Length: 559
Image (cartoon, rainbow, N blue to C red; front, top):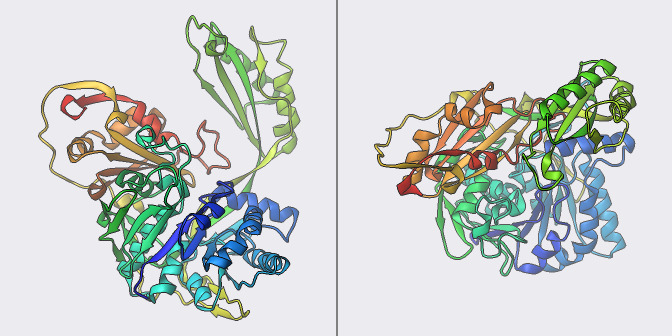
């Protein structure tokens, strides 16, 4: 096929806008509509669901959405591809067939399996499969393809493979489609959601629409959205999403390594951005495996400290609680949000939060929370808590492992019931560790002139997120002149100075001059992953905005 493939997105996470599927189907023509439901934390949640009921383990929200939209998708001939199958793609496929029968809708459902691995001592262990199983299901007549853990971009790449007839040797088209998939995978983040300069958008990003990609036979694409929907698609909104949760410019996937330092973005009209020039390289010889284990039990209590002597009050309650239950497993956070001579009680207060992690549910539960409550009349003046005593909850620990591509079964189960084994790539490469991609050398700019102390965010945007225990922080400049200054100024040492929480950690910087951007990977900032993290911002979503708020010397000519 030579006509463009029009692929939309209707979900960026488990819990995204419920009505998005219907909005996208009614908003304009589509060939394929995708939905991404899985994240590292989601796999843990689904794992606990499956422990309670082995027939579950998939995103049940998707089934309710299809109850509203299945007929509309069938009527309009839109294929649906989703990873909502989670830990039980065959179970969700069966549930969809039952739903279609009850609604008297004639659809064909296929699914992809093989990602689930049996590793001793784990709650979940899932390999990140590629896109060729999805393509096999579509070629086999599937109107809906359900997967478990595939890479997020594969939901877009699979339909493109089936539509254009690409094979594993078509590295540049595969890489280009991977980039389009990465842009779409987080839904409204590509159309103005979570955008640093949201106030500049026509509607202030009050209700951004969801994105779609018009993919061409060479893999290039135009990113846009349905007519009349909110938000905006601009070079900057697309850049922001490209920088989300990435590492080195060599973006490794199971089918191809997409070279992000070859991406070219160009405005192609109102709410249209062309993505071209993407080069691909052979995929790695291994597959990433996301592993969740039960790490123990956790709980938290928060004290309100008001007025004078905040540090002394925090010291007192800390000593009292540690004397009652011991220091092991406790993490304290004092968030100084108080103001001197405040005109409201709330603005005179700060929060002291204590987290506990323990293998003993009793110690982490009522023993801990009741000990905190018992201090209410016997501690610092004005002692009060925002939380009631309660039991501990189990928490998970995430880690990544790697297995050879040949050792993982990848199976497409067609609507007919036929099982098609998907062969691994024959041409692969061994990728270096991400630290091998350190700061590129470049001639330093000779910029001179007056500077002024101002927030960095006046001239740059940022997008940040989580990858296991690591965080990524992407920063882009709004003009070429700002980028020339930024790449000299924002060194790893400067990031550590501006963000002191990062100072003791290993930080990598990767340059993306084609996007006027820098990407930093902060190793270990999130500890053992989102589910176990005790940071105020456990997914590092606001890390970029913290950086933008920091004051630096900026040349006046750039302001």
